[in-house]
Length: 108
Image 1 (cartoon, rainbow, N blue to C red):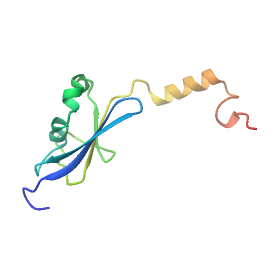
Image 2 (spheres, one colour):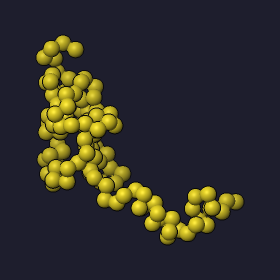
Image 3 (spheres, rainbow, N blue to C red):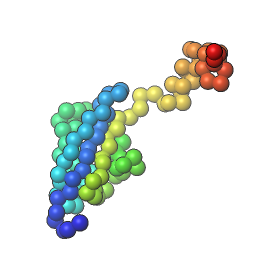
């Protein structure tokens, strides 16, 4: 990549269950994850999102706000989980009963 040449990145976020929003951005060379988040509509649309310390990822790998981006990167802004997935699974299993879920489910 030539020095000073703009890079294209995608910023994705999930503001709610089963909801994914994406924006394609052109940023200056040397842009960071924080630069991409600030340049996207995320901060304007969900100002309280930053207060909940969302998890930041680049292509599914944890990223720091000061991490440098490369052309074609995908920055992911994910909200925190409200319930531990293991606890949620146990609760579903408890409500359904052992005969209605998993290996013990009746098939036929």
